[in-house]
Length: 209
Image (cartoon, one colour):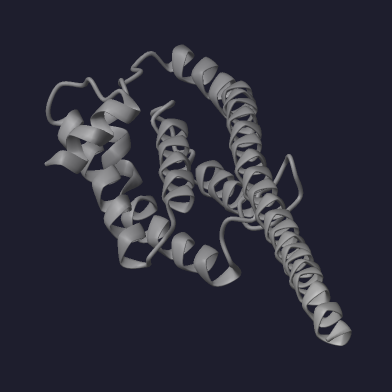
């Protein structure tokens, strides 16, 4: 229940039933899949964004655009499996990508008509359908890709900041250990000099006797 309410808040799900329930179930099942495969938080976040983008592309038109959606899905997965910043971020291994692709196919692509029926407004006028087809298959995918590229850049910047922070912390820790070791060594040398200085008068006193 908490997971569902959190997802509603994150994705801004404010739809009447049954749309709200169907959309929420889609995201919850994705989270469960990620947990089952021990995905990290950033991997789970990326996969949820991919699922959301595919779903939005699918319901943009009542026409059959599943081939474009599945191709778009592959492009998004590729962007998260190859390290080519800022365009690609290596979040998933090849095995994970294969597993994710199978999951998306089984959980969404096989039922895309059902999602389309529930979420897509029906366009009944034939002329509107033709116009809708030309706009959605070209302009919409360009806009969606642009939006997703911006999101990827933001994710890349967050990851770079995280890596940079970890690198700085590591460097500072190593530097502190080095300086601490040098100080310990210097303190030992000073203590040795002090002890020798204390022993020197005693030796001179004994020699005079």
